[in-house]
Image (cartoon, rainbow, N blue to C red; front, side, top):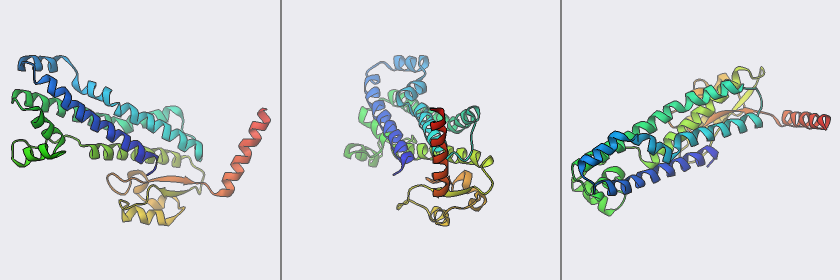
Length: 253
């Protein structure tokens, strides 16, 4: 599990906490008169409240900035101006933020329907969480409720992972535009039971020019692809650059 996998897992865990917090929120709302509940949802921006509690969009952007900074510092094959990097961040995470807004709106709509329909807390939870435990499973199998089409924890994990990977590939593609002639790249990421054959083939190529990766260089090999191109810096070049940086520090001293 690499740093992006860990970050995505954290965001997935955060989303799962939001789902369970929504069940607790519903338990309080259902005790109120229906008209009062409807008035509450008319006056508050529920998706914004959910996103602030989740912190997913902002947290993902911060993780993206941190990752890009570490990537540029570790493999400075080309410089990306701050304003360009910020534009890449805004563009990459706009879709992610829109998806969070959509999913939060779905939770709000499910709450309203459940309050109007006088559903119990267990029935609402089963609709939101699915067959998470024996009681919810029984309600679903009995046809009393239907699992709502709302993002699950695993889907939130996959969405965050895909967003961060796409951002990483976008940064690499921008670096490639001004990289030195002959710059080589490697296909980087986890190797496990989930790794696709396409990614294994690209990993097996070893250091290769950008063109060898085809469309995968910027798009990945498939949806949810956990791999991205990383600039290859040979040991001799790494040592040379390290010596140059050390000399600069000595000169500054």
